Length: 171
Image (cartoon, rainbow, N blue to C red; front, top):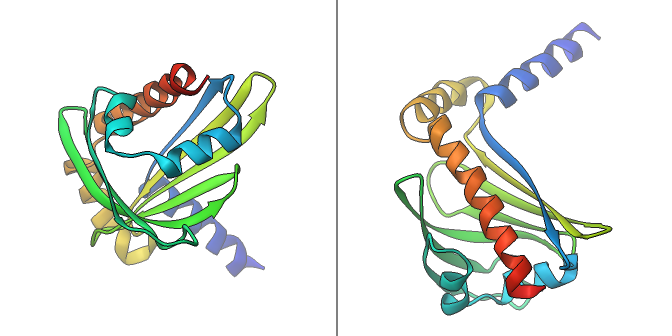
């Protein structure tokens, strides 16, 4: 029992060290299914029109099952160019989408869609890092030198802006 309790405490500590940016956004007058479908059907023109920080979008690999597809997008957030290819790792119609960056360092994005009275609540959850005993040192370095807290705030602010922009695009 003590080992289990110790293990749970270690896991909580790893969660604190691993970089995580969780943002909730209410998107008015847009259903979860409409958001989900739009995100899967977006093209370069619509991606650029979605937010002024968006610089480009490309489908690198399409899979009819959705999971396994790869998309690449570029944005400028917090004064930095962020451009990665992302593999779709999870797709549940109208409920969620999961992405894993095609990058040597672990970067995962999950989007959850919950119906609310006025539309949809989007849960935008960006997780960066290895976690675990060995990974924590690397994660601390990355958190202090590369993916800083100010960049994390800029990512959260960007997520709020871009999903609120969908109210006028899709509403």
